[in-house]
Length: 436
Image (cartoon, rainbow, N blue to C red; front, side):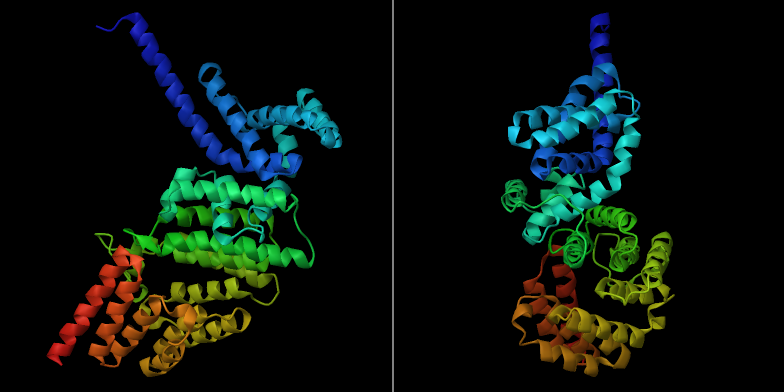
């Protein structure tokens, strides 16, 4: 029989464990807002994250005993602000900032509703943090890692696991990104004028890269990683609320919502890939489709010419509106890809356009476009080039040539599931060649 002291220790441990779980959940919700508010005060992401982490440590120390406060976000912000006050006091060159912060803290201590005080600036703060984390001065990999860290609240281990990269590599990227921002004297701000468009393009690129790695994993054992798609969607939705007049933001959200609607149908019972034309469309998430179509309507209502993301969202909408694969409006998709190619030309866009042309006007027309891309240096190691070429050759009855293309595609991909699919298609072509 357990002694009263043992039962008391077990009870205290259970309370502490429950408090820690609550703190973890609260941190996921509040961390981006907290870091954003602190970055506005101290002007530096690295320092802001350190102050936020200090507040988290204080919560881990105090809340298991005192209980989770009624307004945990306000508690964390108040604690972090006090620590920021001490930090800025030590920085004599930032005396003016200290005086400003001191007035903020005095107001907070004087009984002002902290949630109200924080919420007044939270929109601009979050938007400023997004622009700072995605600043073009950083490499693409650094922008992705820093964004997931400070805006997504993900740990270094979670980011590394999501991208199949060593933890040490992610940690180095984040450290270097913070140092680069500091050395480049990147200001915490919401840009305006011509600079805003360039900076916004960098933000959208980061969010879409995160989504794509979840939607079609470039390496590893899994074909999809839904957690990355969910994080990108969350960031996109936040950005759409913070920048409601930006057509391309809504276009990107539309594109991601509609693509995410297919995730359940995108894998078979054993995790094997299921290509778009073979998917069971009854398994598509129609709530996400309706959200995507609504976002696309918002992008169109803003009146500006549709940008690349909105156009790709419109392409996704063509698939979403088709009850069956046979009902897909391929000529419209070709016209939309023509528009994308004019705004954001790239070999990958041309390859996608070739697929659409092959569906709309026959495999021979598509193959002609693909063959023109074969000498393109940037596609030399891109596995989807031979995969698309193999598909078109197979439709034309050229099974042996198609088999060789599928085998080449399988040798180029780093995703195990995709490699299995391509090898299977190569084997099917080999069987067709023997029967032919």
